[in-house]
Amino acid sequence: MSLTHARDTSGVEAGSEARQGRGAVTAPRPRPSRSLRSAVWKDRVAPYLFLAPWLVGFFVITLGPMLYSLYLSFTNFSLLGDPSWVGLDNYIKLFTNDPKYLDSVRVTLVYVFVSVPLQLAFALALALLLNRGLRGLPIYRSVYYLPSLIGASVAVAVLWRQMFGRGGLINQILEAFGIQGQSWIGNPDTALGTLIILNVWTFGSPMVIFLAALRQIPGYLYEAAAVDGINRRQAFVHITLPMLTPVVLFNLILQLIGAFQAFTPAFVVSGGTGGPVNSTLFYTLYLYQKGFANFQMGYASAMAWVLFIGIALVTAINFWFSKYWVHYDD
Amino acid sequence: MTTNHDTSTGVRFGRARSGRRTALSHFLLVGFGVLMLYPLIWMLGASFKESEDIFTQIAPWPDPATLENYVRGWQGSGVGFGTFFLNSTLIAALSVVGNLISCSLAAYAFARMRFRFRAIFFACMMATLMMPHHVLLVPQYILFSNLGWVNSILPLVTPKFLAVDAFFIFLMVQFMRGLPSELDQAAKIDGAGPWQTYWRIILPLTVPALATSAIFTFIWTWNDFLSPMLYLQDPSKYTVPLGLNAFLDASGESAWGPMFAMAVLSLGPLFGFFLAGQKYLTTGIATTGLKG
Image (tube, rainbow over all chains, first blue to last red; front, side):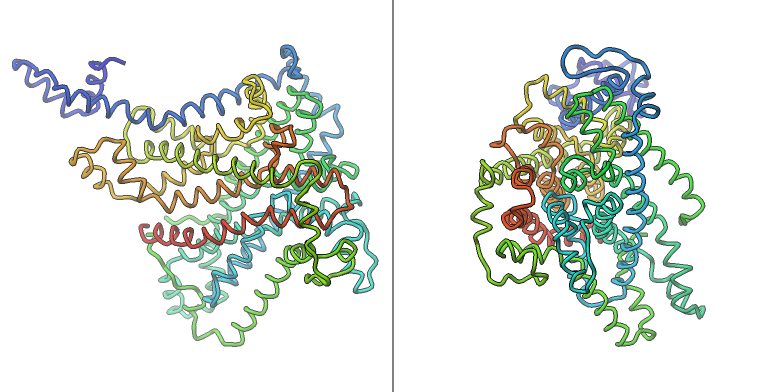
């Protein structure tokens, strides 16, 4: 980009400057001094220098690969040789000729739509309980937040595998009450349940967001309500809940997106198989198996795009429905 | 609009609340907290128990206590955990540095500079926030394997220096927008260029947001399992989560003691960062709250 060009555009942007320039046609336009020119250059170019790492990252590591993956999803590709175009075959196969894929979809949907509402219910209940001006709030908040911090770690997945195993902690406790336990992880009917419990256990991060939102509710609303003789329960139903709905939506979307992408617990608890009988075969786990164990890169890309579109749809539906229950200030 | 209303419903309806209710609340909260943390406390205790006691003792405290698990676990299976911890530390440290530099640069441009395409680029950045990581898994793997970067830490660390974690850019943009614009003008009058304004004026004021970003970057990279599993194949390059998983594969269900010991150690830095950073985080929240 030449300097004169840079000068021209900056003149157009600053309208008054341009008009001034037109008015003074007769007077010879002074050449901008060296320092002014360098200052203008700095103003024009500096933003892009600051942005340079992000620009490279966006085009080379995000946008480019994303488009490439869209292309790959219409091909067969195993890292060796060139991708061969197969049109919609991958997508058709997913939904008509791959029962294991449909299993993974079902498992993921159950996991997401059972664990997220439970998780948010716990988060909201605890936030309301903590918001009563109790002493020791920071300690409680930390204690409840802690599992969110480590819930996705391999260490906790290892712990879960022992706890819900045949001789694990849960069965020891049940035995103390005279109940004969079973391997909760080895049983296809209960294995997914243990992972749902793990996700509900990490309710701390939405709870912290609920707490912050509760503190933002203006106090005068409650004062006015108290003057009108409204009791606690009515104030809760007519003030607290409506004021919280935007944050409920925010947390709901955030946690849904997160839950759709869960991977580590299912991988570690099932030893990478998604077993028993595909009962913990999360979508992402099957995607990993297809892409990086079988090296069906095209097929895995198609799976990734279906997931992407699925998450986008769920998010859009949530936004669409939100107009019926989310309260916004005027 | 966002003035700090520090009064809670409990205070507002102060007369309605009795001491008994408070006691009941504390009772519930403590009980539930213990229930939630019990597995972790039990694992900590179990890491000091003898192998057969792990399957018989419900109580967390070890009786008798032994350090044997830590000694055995540290050796791992083949490559020791010392190596895994070094690898994890290196990756996490580089990720923190990378994210702080690249995200703050981008955030400064978005928050405090005017330029063409700003709105478009900002929208692009926000769009990447919502994109699931898995869409990029396959093509990024192909990209990095073509570059010959597989089995090195480059695929894990390089993206951090290219501001790929848009979440942190957004966090810093929000924070920097709250700083008064007179600061930049004053700096400009004093002859400071954009670089000096960024480095000397804006960055020092952004420390709370930087601290938040550093802590979350550390926690996320320390916990990350999928990406290291894709890119690190040689056990001597494994991170701690990969080491734990390999240990679980190698010893099956037979070595819970050593496994717990290493799991406890792997959580240690997370607890440390959380406790050390908590004060920083709360002050960060307090300052932003005051600024509104």
